[in-house]
Image 1 (cartoon, rainbow, N blue to C red):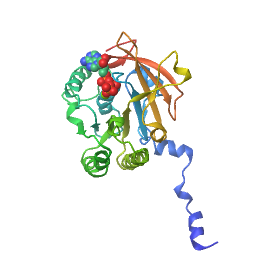
Image 2: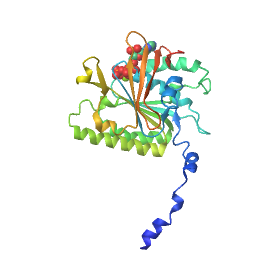
Image 3: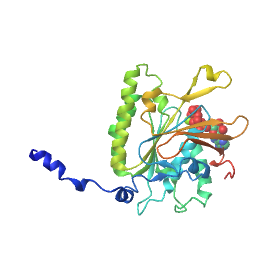
Image 4: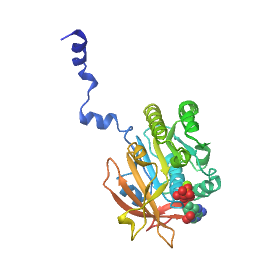
Length: 276
Ligand code: ATP
Ligand code: MG
C-alpha cells in the first residue's frame, strides 16, 4: 500500500455517525413551512431548504399566489439565533405583482398566529426582485449578480417564477438540457454557501393518449431533463366554479404522494376549511 492510500484510510474523522448528523445538519435540512395546515401536512412539515422544489400548474392555478405567500412566510421562519432573512424573487414572464404582494402583506401582518416579526417590519422591503427573460440572462444572474447580493443580504428563499417561461423560445433541446444542468448546479453551489431554499414554478402541457379520452390530463412542462433535477414536485389545479385549489404532491424525498385543498382569497393563501 503506498503512502497516499494509507493517508486516505487514516481519515475516519471526516465521517460522523447518523445520530451526530441529525444535530450537525439540523439547520441545513430545516423546513420552510407554509403556515397553512393542509399544505404543511401534505409536505410533511414544509419544503426542504436544499435542492429544487417545483410548483407546476396551468394558468391561474395559483403558482404565483403560492410563491408570493412563501415570500412572506419565509421571513418569519424560526431560525436559531439568526437574523431575519430575505427572499430573492426572479420573475420571468409577467411584471412582478407589487400591488398583490402589498395587499397580501397587509393581511399577513394582521395574522397574529404566524407573525413573530416586529410590528413595523416591512416584508416587501426584504424581497429582492429581478426581471429576466432568457436562459443566458438567468445563468448570468446566478453566476454574477446573485452571489454579490447574497454576500450582503442573507436570504431564506429564492423563487424563479416561472422557469418554463425562460426556456419558451429555446428550440434546441440539447442546449436547453445543458442550461438546466448549469442553472441547477449553480443553485446547488449557492445553496451550499448561503443556505436557502429554492422554489421554481413551472407550466404544464396537455398529454394526449388513450387515458385522456374522458379527462384532460396535464403534466409539468420541460420534460425529463428538467424533472430529473427536481427533488419535490407539486402540481396545482383549479376547482371549477369556486376559489378552491387542489395541491397534489407528486413526489418528494420525505413525504408520500397525496393531495389537499387550499383557497386563494384577497388576504392570500389559506386552508380550505379555515380561510383567513
Ligand atoms: P400563470 O401561469 O398565468 O402565471 P398562476 O398559476 O401563476 O398563472 P396566479 O397568478 O397564481 O396563477 O393565480 C391567479 C388567480 O389567483 C386568479 O385567477 C384568482 O383566482 C386568484 N387571485 C389573484 N388575486 C386575487 C385576489 N386579490 N383575491 C382573490 N383571488 C385572487
Ligand atoms: Mg404566475
